[in-house]
Amino acid sequence: MQRIGYIGLGIMGRPMARNLLKAGFQLTVWNRTAEKSAELAEAGATVVESPAEVARAVEAVCINVTDTPDVEQVIFGRRGILESNSGESADLLVIDHSTISPSATRQFAERLAERRIAMLDAPVSGGDIGAQRGQLSIMVGGDEAVFERCRPTLEVNAGQLTHVGPIGSGQLTKAANQVLCAVHMMALCEAMMLARAQGLDLSAMLQVTGAGAGGSWALSNLGPKIAAGDIEPGFMIDLILKDLEIVRDEARQCGLPMPGLDLAAAMFRAAAKQGLGRKGTHALCRVYEELAGIRFAPSP
Ligand code: NAP
Image 1 (cartoon, rainbow, N blue to C red):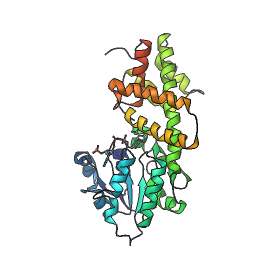
Image 2: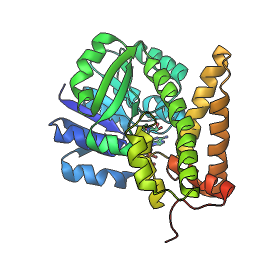
Image 3: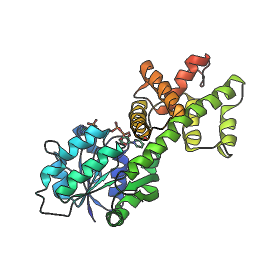
Image 4: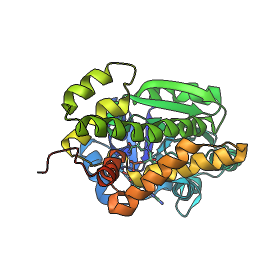
């Protein structure tokens, strides 16, 4: 496959699309807010006016938009991907990198299959930094033969690329990943709060714990941002709240108690109420600052 489309050029989509261009793929892009396509146009991508036009120009379309209704809209909505296809061609593949509902994903794939379009769910983890470096962890659900066809495209942005099962399995794996991220963010804030309150040097604390059994991606990448007072996203609090609703739905369906997740969701909701919804998930530190009456970073 040489001709790839990209729909959704946000914090994640833009660097992932750029990596595809750099790797030599012929790229056609569309973004709802047109200005965000300019940088990719300069880098050599063809910018078009709708998802349908993207789909007409390519062999595989990557989607990277916010939530389940947004994926539905770019595929099935007016001037969506489906409008490009008469049902006679079996060539088009859809690769969805967004984080959305696993059950909706299965329904979307069924509806696409009726028009002979194959779909993979391929959500990612590793944040904006992983996207910029092309070092994301990509968890893929769908037909294995389709996965193998898409492997060279997916590998461009992957540090770890794993086919995890049938359609929807990528989103289920991502839901598990979000439990880890959400609950761990509380642990990171609490560990750093203790260190700060006791007068430890935060950077020394992060360096040594990051190399031990308490280490994590969040600690190494977001711990220093908390210590520096930098709460820009990254991955926004509004988005993790969306993901935790997806997790809750799945847990409810299996009758699972998830007390850690419930607490983390309440903490992130408190952060959103403080006006931090569009800040990074590590802005949870601001809720802890309020609770404990301490500051992680010296005032500017
Ligand atoms: P973002 O910066 O807010 O970008 C969202 C993109 O989706 C924008 O291009 C936006 O278009 C587009 N969009 C949203 N609704 C749309 C609609 N109805 N129709 C057409 N386009 C629409 O978000 P992001 O951080 O890149 O996240 C994208 C996806 O990746 C989300 O599902 C998120 O959960 C997931 N994710 C994010 C991270 C991260 O660290 N940021 C990590 C892993 C996974 P406009 O430009 O017009 O707003």
